[in-house]
View (cartoon, helix red, strand yellow):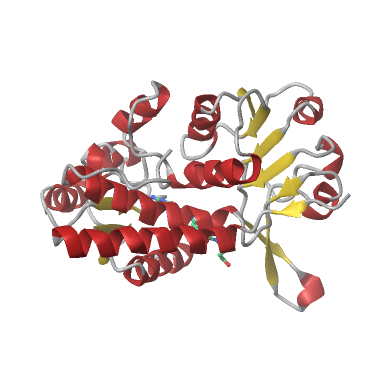
Length: 300
Ligand SMILES: Nc1nc(=O)c2c([nH]1)NC[C@@H]1CN(c3ccc(C(=O)N[C@@H](CCC(=O)O)C(=O)O)cc3)C=[N+]21
């Protein structure tokens, strides 16, 4: 039976619509315009594309977008000074420092200098600890987007076997925490996992977040399982012509779709939800900063 395709692009549009409604209400009733500051260090072309697209989406939902582009040689002291300034700017409710940073900058130090309540990426050590102990926090955007899609598809996740492939701080670990919070039985698998195919075959939910093109073949997928593909890998596509490329996930989509009950495509799955959740987190931060009720449906 063919899998249901979980349309992340359409779901993200719905989330952005909800965000826009909250923004309109904050403006009308409280005179508050949520603001997101994005800091980009260096000229990495892929990062520039993401930052531009984040800025555009931010403005489209009615929020203020503040872009700070620093050159690749910026000193740690100058970057920390900018973050300090954004931390104390009342017009800025969310701060995102685009990763990766150039090698001479200490990512942990930089991320942990962001005020935790403005850390819309959810990477600050305080937010990591709050999530791990089930307390109110800023939740990383990609795992939050995955959770929203899973809840939408399943309703309750309680008691389901979930396997997260990948143990990164950005996706794998927070994803596991969120699934645990929704009462899944969670396994985190990684490059040293024994018998990975058998581990994945037990899963009702598979979240693939490794960054290796099409590494999960369809025959690892249990019949009817839900597959969330976090990978965004650009590979050569000679069939499209000389020098052409295409995007693929960490899952071999064609074979997995034959066995899965539901699956997210790449592109058009997790990626658009990541940006929608960034906007959602910014609205949440603006509400919390002003002691207003949390926006419903936009938080974990
Ligand atoms: N501090 C920080 N926070 C981030 O959230 C962050 C970051 N740094 N550094 C870079 C990565 C990458 N990232 C993506 C977001 C959306 C798509 C996305 O929407 N992708 C489209 C395809 C886009 C295309 O065609 O290239 C899709 O999957 O459909 C991709 C990648 C956020 N990142």
